[in-house]
Length: 311
Image 1 (cartoon, rainbow, N blue to C red):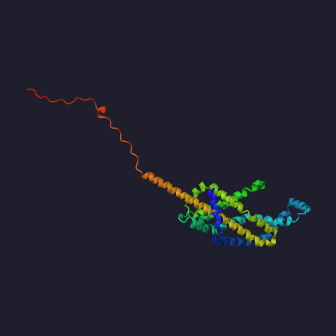
Image 2 (tube, rainbow, N blue to C red; image 1 turned 135 degrees about the vertical axis):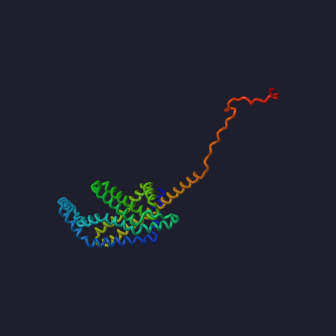
């Protein structure tokens, strides 16, 4: 827990670093250009399609009549934009995460390593293509789980639990891998994932809840159409900063546990070397039993006679 908290506060402090602020504009420009371009091409057709679906539903029409009786008929005007925005929000979140992981995480990890882990050897256990393959594979699994879990979102408590769990799992898979790709070997990365899976998943879920904050701005953009063009880039920049903070948090934590893992391996190797070089303890020599205890009784040799016999 101490390492989690210290890594988090270090990440918050690093967000004020000029290099981090400058790097945050790279995915911001990319995502804003993509969002405005897609919005220009598909915003009105998407609204028309959603409105046609709402008007074709008899149940929705009865709800409209009930709301008009209560004086809440204006909700009908903003419902279609809200539905479109909430539908594209997961796409914006995922693309922002991938943009930060691709454009920012390697540089942020190098920044953390230069300032805190200068002696940490780079073993390069994950190439750029392997990282991209890992991210896309994790994204595919997250989308499958998200689609399979959609029916459970109708249960009020689960809608607050399932999406953050899925996005948290995706965040930890992508950002933890990228944080370790340059410095850890494949074996070290697997060992860290095995030992710290719970902590990494908790970090990802927490970052997933932080990522829900810009959704308020999306909704505000639908309610105040005049400010929508301003609020969209602002919301995307908040997404970028949230994932930049997450990337720094994972970099501080993962490099710290990698350093501890290597120190543990060195300590174990030194202990084994000391045990191997020490002289083995020789057993005490067996006691030599007394000769008379083992020797058979024998007669003394005969003494020669002083007077040899006469022939």
